[in-house]
Length: 118
Length: 116
Image (tube, rainbow over all chains, first blue to last red; front, side, top):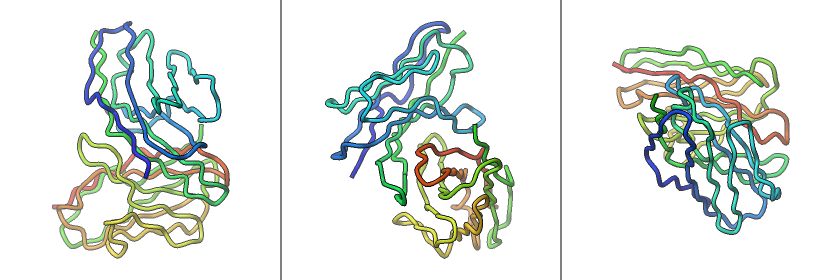
C-alpha cells in the first residue's frame, strides 16, 4: 500500500523568505503522480503543483517548485518570496496511475500548516 | 480551471434527520467523483468513489447505508447522510475528475454539517 508522510506539522517564516515543505512517500509503483495541494482558511482545496513520476525535470509554477527525488521517494515543495496569502495547510498527495477506468484515488499526507508572518 | 460547486455550504440539522449534499461540476463532465470527510486539523479521509451510472465504491469502515451516494449524471453527485447523529458532524468535501484519463481532481468548497 502507498503511504505519504509529511514530517513537519507546522512551519512559520517571515514574509519574502523561502520555505521548503518536505514530503516522502512509499510505493512499489513506477508510474504515478505527485501533487501539492493548498487549503487556505476558506478550506477550498487548491492544486499548487503536479509532478509526473516519469518526468525527470522538476515541476515549477511561478514561485512554487518541487525537488522530486524518485530514488529517495522524496517530493519537497519550495515556496520562494513567500507572501501572506501563502498561509494555509499544505497537503502532499500521491496518485497511482490506474489506467483508463482506474479509480485515480489520491493518497494524502497529514498536512503541514504554513504560517507566513508579516 | 474547472469549477466544482457544493450545496449547501453549511447545514445544521436535528439528530435523526437526513441531509443531502450536492456536488456539481459546472463546466466539465465528471466521470468520477470522490467524497471526503475532513476532521478539524486533519487530512482528508476518502469516503467513497463514484463513477457515473455505477454504484459507489466505499472505503473500509464507511457505512454505505448511512452515507448514500448517487452519481446519476456526469455533472451531479449527491451524498445523503441518513439518520444523522452528532458524530456525523464534520466537513464534507467532494471532488471531480474529468474525462477518462485526467489525473487532476477539482475540489468543491466543502459543506459544514452540524448535527444537534
